[in-house]
Image 1 (cartoon, rainbow, N blue to C red):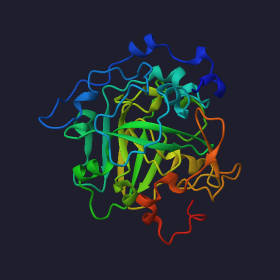
Image 2: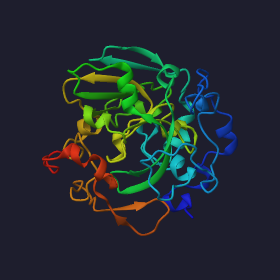
Image 3: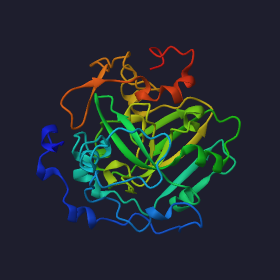
Image 4: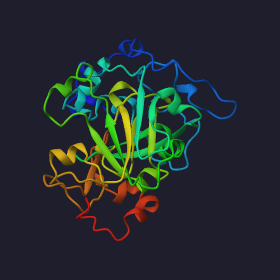
Length: 318
């Protein structure tokens, strides 16, 4: 069983259950639809969760794309992650993210779409049938997890806002609020954090807009209240706390590529054959395991996404 201390996180760094339970409510909009599980299971819940027992959790509506691998614990997911808006240490997000205010929350839909506008999150979620999807997650630094996300395909939102035929890419923007995100007061990256996908990547059925994990609303430190999940790419592509989605006709910049273009490309597909300049990507260490395992091409999702990159030089287009 994984013990956080083995990854440099002391017991004093882990937020207590009482602190989790007493934080802000997630949202207060929408309701159950007559059929299926819609946005309502995410409403009137705390935005940061108490610890979950992964052995007792069962997906209610498991997506067909889920892996059958064992999930990591809630403690793994919530106390060891990257969210530089709250600091550069893996334990900083859990330590400082209580300052984030995930409600109310609006998302700006911009650019080459027929239905632009500023949408309350309740409107984004309205009518969406939520799925539990258990995805592998691979970080560029060499560690990995298996995470039970809760969300809906990004393709559903794309259809809802009706992009024009000129839209070839999508850019995503994270909240910029240094009063809530103390890491933004530092010059670690250019703020706000931005990421992008090609339109066909965004439309792929694996690409998820996540609102929760382990069947509950996203904790602040994991990107509340809305984040992207692109499981065949390195973790930094899965942008958190999204406030704007822009449909454009040119390849957008992304934060890590702007910061270090020789190390981080636009595509950032998990590829064991293309090393980071400072370390190998051939193997990874799953949190909670001692031995490393072989990194899978496209993180094991090649049968679903490999055709997106047919004919491309994946060393050049890294």
